[in-house]
Image (cartoon, rainbow, N blue to C red; front, side):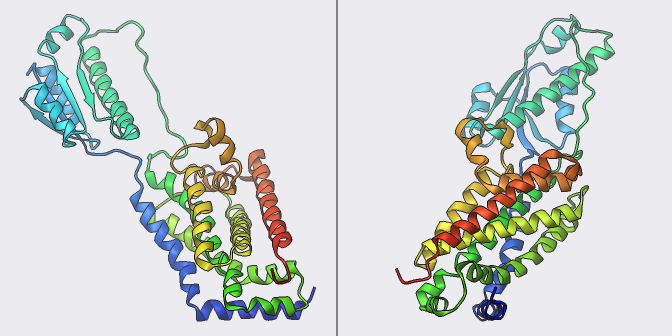
Length: 373
């Protein structure tokens, strides 16, 4: 290996990054993505606008209403209007859900008879509607259990749940989203920067320096990777500090595992960008193509918005074709679970990530031509 020549190319890359101010983007882009998306993405539904029509005006109906008024998940309003007017409010997107308490509500409860409560939910956003539906069902069932206990009633088939939430006990959105965002950031940011490394040489004509140099293709690619790899390696620690101290995400696993897997993942991201830089001829095209092949899979197949295990068919297969799924599994383990290398799946995923890097780097080496085309 021609160490002195490689060192000269590495130094040249550092100088180019400094002069072009690209070094600012190395740290500004990851921080912006983490802060904006970390605070912006919310899966939990709070302060749902619930309209309640109480046609019974009884003690038990008021107790049920109090359940909604004393919960942070609802912003209830008790009105005396017709159901038609209330449904129009949902249609106009002024109300998320409508609850209609029948006039015989208390009478039926006292006689141990079945009483039906009308619930209408805005289903424009299915995920949000399903969440609100679960909240309302839980609130009504909780109130029903309290009434049954006071009246000494034990309905046949009644089941008592002793529920415990694992890994994210507080059910915080940040604990679920921020680790996944780190996987997205370390895929997108290094890839965009490395996508410009070779294509800019083609545009400026300085690629002829490589054609005339004694460097092999692998040495040239290594010289291109080393500077941006060192710069982005600092983001591993920066993102960790932001996640733990700004978003209060717990860290229960091995920091060494987090660091090593992140370094390997950055190499994969850089190799993807270099591959794009090799096959394109314009910087704009390289950036657009890199954004498409990193951001879209990064969101869809990272587990941020939907668990991979819930996918079926082609989507499940596609998720396994991108490295972000494997890396994010390791991230969620280090932050929330802490099983580490004791898990065979973690060891397997590390091996798969290493395979991704070797494949992309080898593909770039084969595709790069040390001659004019």
